[in-house]
Amino acid sequence: MKKFIAIALFLGTLSVSAQDKKIENQTVDASCGQCKFGMKSKKGCDLAVKIDNQTYFVEGAKMDQFGDAHGHDGMCNTVRKAQVSGEIKGDKFVASSFKVLPVEGHKHDAHDGHKH
Image (cartoon, rainbow, N blue to C red):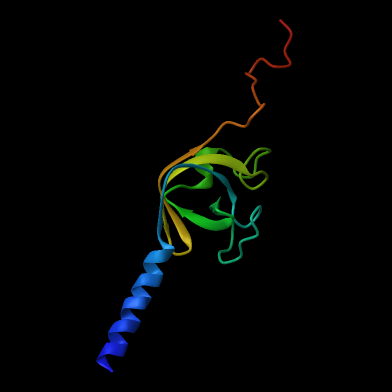
């Protein structure tokens, strides 16, 4: 019986650690988990990433750090690219670094559309 318990504990520990994965400077999709990724385990609007076709809520960064989440190009209205480092722990991504990348083809300054 003791061997069975020891084996069960070992396999349980092995399966938990198999879910954890370190991520270093990887470019991922980032957006609102609820609005854009259809995640339902939390209410409201929360930052999430998609890594290897799996979505994770983010700890260590918030959507409003990157502008108005509900603005035209905010996280609740568009999926952005982000360069991230951190660790997947169970069903969440714990970010040690999170940088939203500029929108491609969106090169303008405050004077666009103005004639001088």
